Amino acid sequence: MKKLQSTWYNMAVVLTLISVAMGAALAYVNQVTKPTIEQEQQKALETGIQKVLGGGDVKVNEEKTLTDANGESLQVYYTDKGMAVKASDPKGFGGRLVALVGLDYEGNILGYEVLETKETPGLGAKAQTWFQAGAKGNIIGKRAGDLAVSKDGGDVDAITASTITSRAFLRIVNNAAATAMGKPDANTSATGLHKN
Image (cartoon, rainbow, N blue to C red; front, side, top):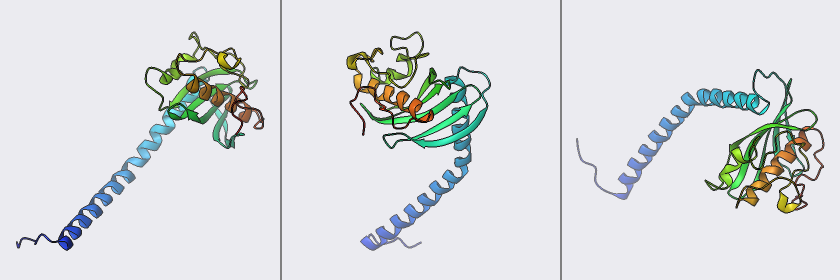
């Protein structure tokens, strides 16, 4: 086989062919793995809904996509045990914070799980455990809607050295309750600091 000359044209052709082949391979792998990934995400969501609503079998009766007062999209799962609300806040210290919040139909917090976070490990990332039952910032059993950190006049202890993350998390919980219960015009920060 004759060796190709090392010219710009030949290099461009070879690189283009390699790029096309790699793109096709990636598209194929994406098509093959997409159903499995979707099944795993659905399973993780179902497990999360059970967890934030106290465990056991949970029957989802209705699912809605709603928009809160700040224009954020929420996914609400109405069940036989309460509501599970997937909500987010873009103003965490590390960026967007996403959580699944379990509420009874009176707006009391049954549980929560942080789904996505880019908060600082060892500080803001503690949101997964800090606000759970028995922890220092426990919000389980409290009525959502007016939760605020003590620094802002509320009664929830902020994560040590992570007040911004704590505020973002409590806005998620307050927004989840206000929107799922049909009050999307409520002041969702409970501190007056954010009403965008």
